[in-house]
Length: 177
Image 1 (cartoon, one colour):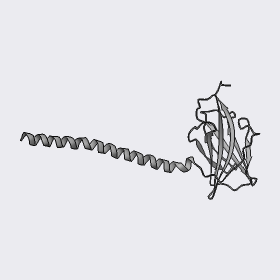
Image 2 (image 1 turned 60 degrees about the horizontal axis):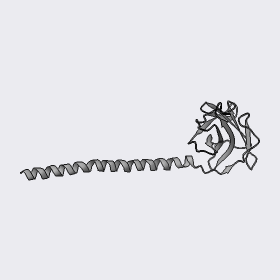
Image 3 (image 1 turned 90 degrees about the vertical axis):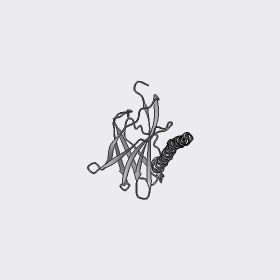
């Protein structure tokens, strides 16, 4: 009788050890599946299929005035960011004007570090029929560097294409320079 109860206890002990390992395996597989789904869904947001990119305008200082760039067909995109100086971690008023081009379905401004990846930072704009411009709010994230070169890319979404208008500027931490 004693050996029977010892064997029964041993079987219960082994089956008890297997269940947590199985649960951890299922949890790990579920975690991998979730990460895979997130990557598949996020890929189009992070890696845009841009049809045409306007040339940079090196003559304009976006920190002190609105700037414009042109596409090869002559269409013009103007970006204005307020307040001047474009401070980090402060609300920014964004205004995009379009000339000689059809109205897009959607307009966004994507802020990206030129020399340092700063994560996903994209602001969706709304069309203001009163002014005829696309407006919205954005914010530069905090940066550990004293000076940071940014590209504010205006993304113009059309049903059959995506246009990008790049604007570069350098931000400085207060008191850095």
